[in-house]
Length: 74
Image 1: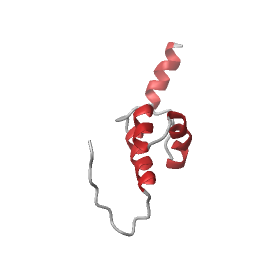
Image 2: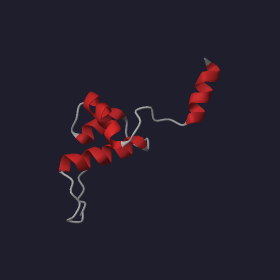
Image 3: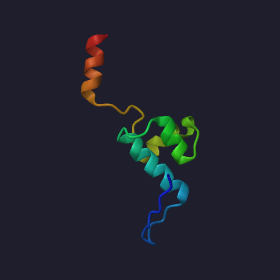
Image 4: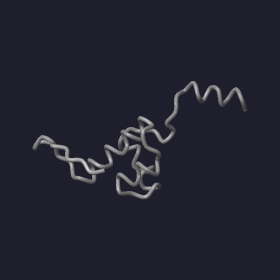
């Protein structure tokens, strides 16, 4: 799928920065896997994971209650 997204002229983002930002947010929302997000960003999975911090996105992307349940089951 291709999309055209008009942006204001004063937004100072390169196409690769925009792709990384979009990929990180979709990963954060659980709409893309890390591999899918990496592909969207044009990066290797490792490269994408390493850059998540620059987008203030945690690699460990699941609700705290899920973690509590995992701890109880361990």
